[in-house]
Amino acid sequence: GAGVSQSPRYKVAKRGQDVALRCDPISGHVSLFWYQQALGQGPEFLTYFQNEAQLDKSGLPSDRFFAERPEGSVSTLKIQRTQQEDSAVYLCASSLEWGGGNQPQHFGDGTRLSIL
Amino acid sequence: TQLLEQSPQFLSIQEGENLTVYCNSSSVFSSLQWYRQEPGEGPVLLVTVVTGGEVKKLKRLTFQFGDARKDSSLHITAAQPGDTGLYLCAGAKSSGDKLTFGTGTRLAVRP
Figure 1 (cartoon, rainbow over the protein chains, first blue to last red):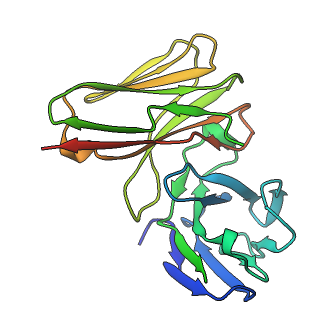
Figure 2 (cartoon, rainbow over the protein chains, first blue to last red):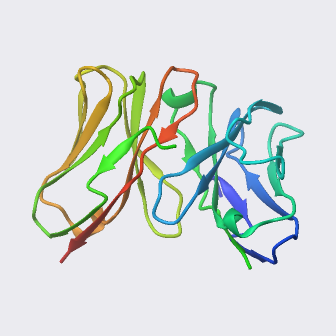
Figure 3 (cartoon, chains in turn cyan, green):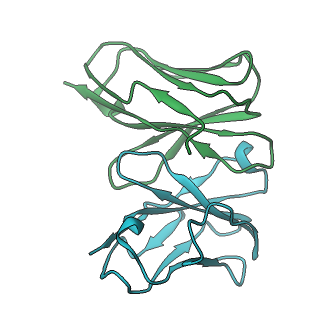
């Protein structure tokens, strides 16, 4: 499809396990964003890439969270030693150009992560 | 910390009624976007406003950016069940800044 694709759609893990969430942005989109969304709340910014460069990771909650986009297209968000408070929907978005908030962001449908 | 507060948090109305959702902040934003999100899906952009006092219309939806660029409103005329969803405002403090999302307003329109 032509939209942002995220996988898996649902992930259940035991506390302490590592997880990896994948995002395929729209082809040709320069910017890629990761957000964390708690139930009924607005998304909260985690990190941002321009091509392969991670320009802002100020929203990552702890050093257990790590994101990469090695070839400037697909991105992976990794969470190590998961904890129950990591349970949330993780959203990925891409935009055609760099321009931060002035550019429309196209969102995937998210990965719902549940930590038992 | 959410810099953008939305009100009301929840709204349940009958089909055909009008409603207004507010997005307020003590900070100035260079631009503000409104998104709608349905269950199990990602947010979908409705509009971007960039000029203080700007008003944009999208069919039955009217968006306004405050003169001081600290607040915005979304007005829906004659709401339809298809308008049901989570409405999110999101602001950027500069053209190159990341988006900060509001707390969200969950709207339910009853047939």
